[in-house]
Every structure is written in structure tokens, then in C-alpha cells.
Length: 351
Image 1 (cartoon, rainbow, N blue to C red):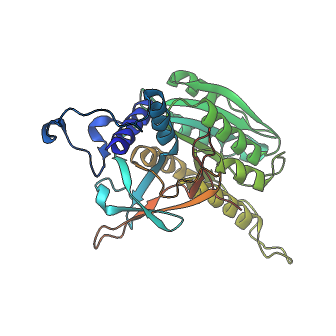
Image 2 (cartoon, rainbow, N blue to C red):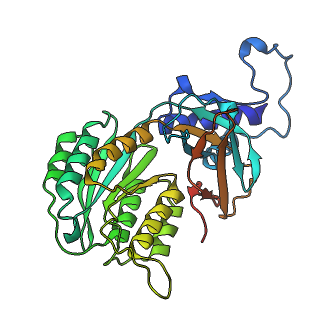
Image 3 (cartoon, rainbow, N blue to C red):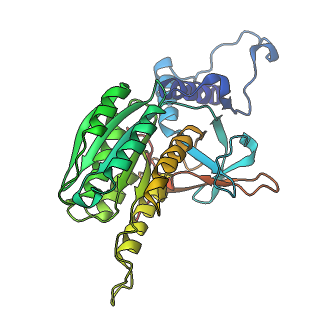
């Protein structure tokens, strides 16, 4: 009974810290009874092996650190978000082993969003439309959301720190000017790092707009992927790849366009985000709306791993939905890195 109580309390600590609404949170525990259901036990001496209060507190904090939380988007065959899936219709596998869902919510929660805009010279013809779409996305933010702005040319620069002041963010966006080369990987690294460390909301996202071809980054692809493995930040990308070469090389057979799209898809898939490749500039406004909807129509699923080793290894995670005849797809991060003593779970996937 004490273990179940500690798990409930540990979960409530995290729920309060992360802002998940208690009114919509489902908490599962096999032996959790209400006071009315419990008969009053006879007076007993405390057992000799009962832990001191401070030791119980440590157990609760450890349980809180071991809890794995997943932001899950469910879509139908038409790629539309689905928000009527119940807890018992979800299945969570960790390293192919079924996990018991302890916490479940489908409440809209605040988001910390880093808008990361490519202002290299090749984006000049598109920048005005990108800015307008970004401004529309900002205007749809909720009062508890916070937004930041990063621009990147030959190197990334944080122009606007996290703020809830929509007008400040809009002013920053409208002051962007295109020039020089593209350090996309550096910008992605900086955006994820800043969101992870400085974002006050549990749900964090980087929205990056680029033509997709990195030319001037300090960080390499594998370094950025490893960094994403260590953060729980969803990456959404809008890639204008149509202007890139479609001709493959003789040795590797992949064109610039293919390589750019593969890179952007990889970044999105690692984090449970999504990559978009508009064929027309006019599609950007619709895509911005889709991203905004995606971020606000997610489930939160929490579980305590059956593998309780705190060994710092990667754990592959897969979430699926069994909804009868409905064909639904659940999208979330690919996994997380188990904590070591003194740490908490992080997302990721090994190379």
C-alpha cells in the first residue's frame, strides 16, 4: 500500500510541477482505495523495518525522477488530430515490453516555443511570407505560452528571449532581413538547447523554417542528433526544398533535395515532431496552423518503466492505439535515456 501511495504522491508532485490539470488526469494504482472504502485498522505498533520520513521522501523523489512522460499526437488516415482516444486504447512498449500507464491527460497545456527562422540569402524571396505566417502563429498563442525567436544565417543568434509579450515577438519577426549563408544545424542545436534549459513549460517545441541545406554549421549532423537525444523538445520543420538540385550524385545517388529532406525528417521523427515540405509558398500559412493545432491537441502519458535500472542506457519507446476499425497513428519521441542516480529521464535514440 505504501508503494502505491508513494507513486501517487510522486506523480502529483510532477503533475503540479508540470502544469497537467488534475481534473483531467487519470491516475491508475492497483491498491489505491478512498478513505470511505477502507476499514479502520486496529491500533498496531509500527513495524520495525518502517522507513523514517526522510527516507520515504527520498523514495518519492526517486519515483518522480523515474516517471517517463510522453507527449503523444494521434492522427487519423486523413492526417487530422484525434482527441477522443481513451487511456485503455493506448499501448506503450519500452524495448518491446508492455508498460502500465499510470498517468493520462488530454488537456491543453502551455507550450514554450522557439521560432527559428532561416534568414540566409537564399531565403530572401520567401522571407516576407514566412514572417507573415510566423506572426499569425504567434497571434494564436495562448496567454500562458511563451515564445522566443532565433534567426540564423552563417551563425544562429537569439534575438528574443522567452516572453509572453506577443507584440515584442511580432516586432522581432518583422525586423528580420535575409543575407549570407545557412548554419541550420547550429540553429537547431541552439534552439533545442535554449528551449530545454530556459523554457518554463513542460511542453517545449522548436519550429524551424529553412530551405533545408546546411552550409556553414560548426556542429555536425550526428552531434545535433545526440543533443536532441538529451532533450525533451519537439522539433517541427518547414523545409523549402523545391529549389534544391534534384539530380543525384554518381557515387551516392542522392540529390541535394533528397539529403535535405532526409535530414529534416530525421530530426522531426527523433522528437515526435513533424516535417513539412511546401510546394508553394502559399502553403506556409496552412502549415503554421497545422503546427499550432498539433501542439495543442496532444495526450500526456506517464509510466514507471518495468526496467528499473538507473544505468543511463537508451530505452526505445513505441506508442500505438487500438481503436477497433479506426486506423489511428500515435506519434511521440522515439525513446529516452534512462537516468543515472541523481538524474532524470531524457529523450533520445542511439546511433
